[in-house]
Length: 273
Image (cartoon, rainbow, N blue to C red; front, side, top):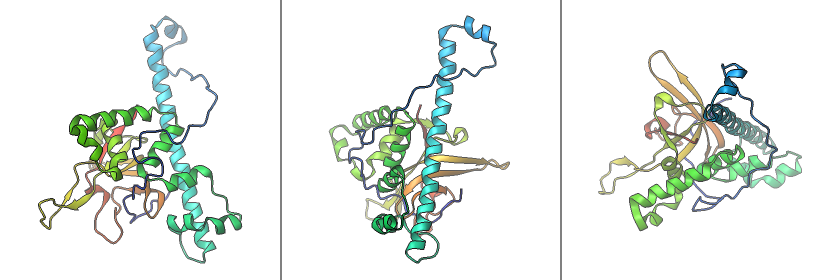
């Protein structure tokens, strides 16, 4: 999957819910299939094991399967988004790919041309970065509501009643950062969350730009490349302002026409158990 460069940090439009605390999209009901127990232990050993051992194996299998489901869903939507941007550009007589805004504003033309946009693809590209992540994990049946709740509690503990004044625009990404398990860059894996801060003017009215002390953008880690020189190149799928759902690298520009890269925005990582 190609990475798309020079995209803005998400606009955080909050199609879902400004407080980002309610389940707007209901997960599709699926028939529960018993998980196989994968273990080096012989069957008779498992029978003799205590329940905690078997439960632990089943839990780990379920976690791996769900991580794959989340990332696969994100990759599918990313791929379909790229296809629809190319088709829309061709429909509009343009070269390359259309912006996601052009796709959304030309839905009538797209429908008339017989180009179908999957409902999930459309919804993912109408929401913001945190809404996209929430949608992917809901589809994967992950307990993301617990993560959001924990993040809300942590925000209240720090700011008290003033937590309600915390920027609605960036609330979703920050709640996910606070509520997820903190992961060191050396231990990250596909399916983890990646968070970025933003650059703003200093509050002391100086001309120096500073990083915010909270997350303003979030994505899902899609690939981790580790070299022999102890460097790690991370790719992630996220909802951007102009590109919609795309895959980027931390080496890519975070803003169009500015020399600001994702790696400069203090990336940190979280995991949803």
